[in-house]
Length: 124
Image (tube, rainbow, N blue to C red; front, top):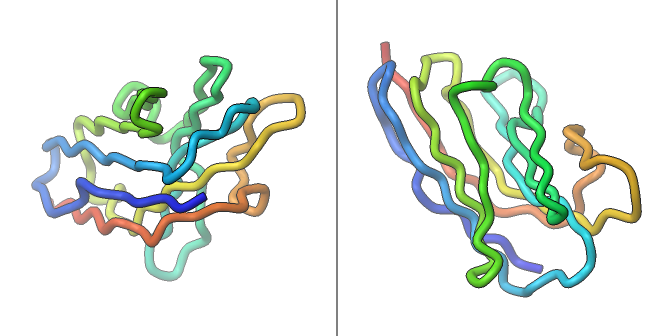
């Protein structure tokens, strides 16, 4: 599965962006698809995950500001990001895995397929 991100860029604090991630193939089985970010000198962290069963997970720092949704017909995950803060500055990566059971993990080590990343820069 190949993933292609789009929608990154530069914005001032309080602004909005929408990231998109398109998958090259449809995953028929239950799967997780979502966004991770990595700032310079920091570990990669899970930001928002969409479970194909309709559940979502967010890291605490983005709850209420970011949302994630999926268009199954386009194999694309969208993430509108509102009220962006300078601490949201990072390279954002899309990733996906098939899920055998349980909840979609926020830990990046569980994910197999990754996009190339899209830079988001928020200035104060």
